[in-house]
Image (tube, rainbow, N blue to C red):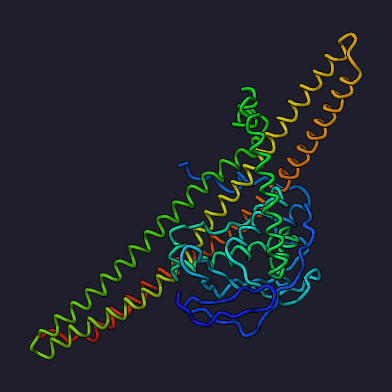
Length: 460
């Protein structure tokens, strides 16, 4: 990253920009972030089985419409772009900011076109809020945090992260539910003051929840073995739908295999790049060998080969960069998305576990109330207190049941949509990969054939 323009103060919604990565463009207009903080509405080793054997079928037209991603929305009515990554600061406090451009026809947005500045942790905020407000929805994955790369902030790392953030927002805007969330609108519109105030508010709320959980830690240390087994999944498993368990097993295997494919794809490109560099060195060595020849005709033959190798390696390096961008990185994103699916499934299991826990709590309180009623001379205050506790536990049980049903039904629709979108994405990615490999082979073969024509004929 090299400084390319001085720091400047922008309109609300912008941070000062101090350096820009090479190869990125400066926008032609100055956008202005708008909006005040809105009220946030709650709203293993075996190969994976065939799709048809694991997709949970939807019943009714509504489920099919949502799974297809239509849901009454169009792709063109909300378009976002993440671009122009800029390094801010130096040393341990350095970070990269990104321009986020929005073009929309949705009536709830204040402007048809808008631009704000966001950094990586702001995208994390959005992802977490989308997950909290939309239980059961598969929120698109963000690129992993890389502590080592963060401190170096190399150009390649920054550009790959920028592309990954762009893909994240693109998938969010295509989701039939997340697209219309107030959290996304706030992320895309809020000026700097409103944004920082909302982020600070949610941080305080998260801190309070964390303290509450820590305060309850001693209680969970003393729960019975039955509850322990329930949390570990032994009881949860017994109540799960067998068809859903098949889907969950499929996703687990899928994530494993996608991760392996990405790992080997990355190694393949690295080895191809190493071979290309070796060939380039070989060409230079041939050129130097030709310089030692006294006869000009032989010197020229060496030079022809060296020049052709230089051309081949230059073109191959460019193609390999495209393979990395259009195949290796998408495979990495597919593996991340599979992990996001697993996270939603874990939420479903945790919610079912809470349902079972609340059910047992209700049964215990029913037993306590029955004992009190059967006890001669029991005080009315104790009876009233026991009834209130039972009512409160019953209410919590119903809340837990309702949340579980929401997650269960939404996940059915989400999984069908996930399979459809992933299939199209994967086929397109594989075709692009095959085309790139074919083009590399075609270009190299053409250059070698041309070289055969250029070299002098053998002496009789």
